[in-house]
Length: 156
Image (cartoon, rainbow, N blue to C red):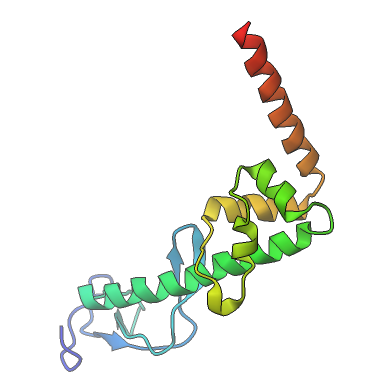
C-alpha cells in the first residue's frame, strides 16, 4: 500500500484506506487501555469509517512509540504511589514487605534522566492499591506472618 493509492476498506467497502496522521488517537499497550499515539505517526486507516490497517512497518513504529510512552506511564504511576506511601511506611520497609530488592524503589524514584528501571504493571497496580488504601499494609504484614507460622507448623 503506498501513500498515493487508496485500497478498499474491509468494513465499509470504500476505496478510502490511506496512511493518516492525526492527533487524539490512543492504543492499548500491555495492561494500559489507552496510551496516546503520537499525532505525527501515520497509520493506514479508512477516512470514512476509521478502521485501521497498519502495515508491518507502521505496526513496528507504533509498538516502539507505545513502549516508550507506556513505560513512562508505569514509572510515573509507581513513583506517585511510592510518594503517597512514604508518610506511612519507609521505602525499605515497603521493599521488605513486597519482596523487592534493597534500593529498588529508590531506583524507580530516580531522576527522569536516570530512570532506566520500569516496574511491571503488576507491581504498579499493587503499589497503587496500597497507596489508595494504606490500611491494607497491615493486612499484607499479617498475611506473611500467618504464612510463616503455617509453614513452621507444617514442618512439625
